[in-house]
Length: 330
Image 1 (cartoon, rainbow, N blue to C red):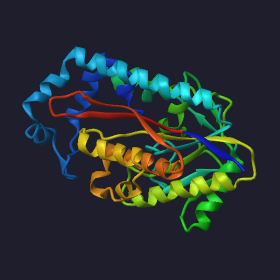
Image 2: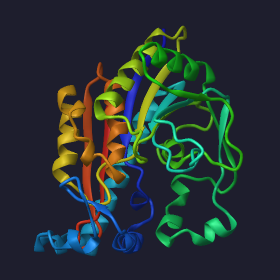
Image 3: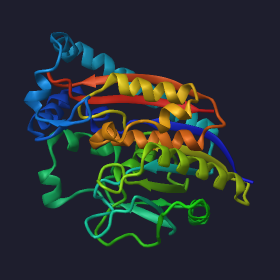
Image 4: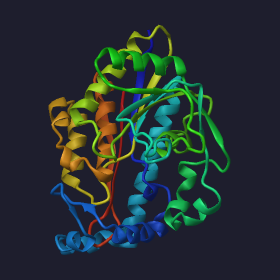
């Protein structure tokens, strides 16, 4: 039977890969956001969020503070990449969310797997590249090659995972052809371009609709998906070494350190009750990518979890930014 040998979870925010000189550009986009999800689970304007922030927030915006935090993030990523390389997985199950990259208004599944042999990363070009904000463009190397790049997929394990999810009464979409003109999303390319997953290592992408209401699975549902993924891997007739990777998170665009630390505690303390009871209202907008970590925790329940680092990357006076987190299970 196949064996899960390692779990890895990492934020994939552009703030992580753009350099701190671009953090003001990210902050300017926050200021233009008409609706920011506050710590109360409700949407507010930037000015409304700003009015609630403590004066000490200004200390978080010092250039030296930014640079120190950026270095911590790079060290954490390097550490995860080293562990991934040492584990030498034959296949990586990647749990992430699609942000209108493969799925558009013609159908956004709550859960999906891909049963073909490869998916292609198409980097933005032409007008799409010109429209891209400077900060996003500066970080694009972390999620796109400079040419169309093929990512091999383990169709056999993908189908087995799908079969097991269906047998466990999860409604999941299986597709076998990449929609024309659409690209594999950044949640699924980040492990290769930043975590060093070899180009020859097939992935099993598990797509969780975290962003787009109303068909967003609950935290309990996502944890259950992870549990089935574990059983699917362990029941698969193969000697493959499998890694599980969660991509994205934690809270953004308004950082909620309390929520982030609660999630990390639930993972490191192996407390499914905490993880499955996370409220839907707080798991919207960028915060919703926490669901990818919850699903990974379900899949990796048999392994010990270690928090590598948690870096609240504040980038504006209103406390916007990304709670950047890094963890592994072994």
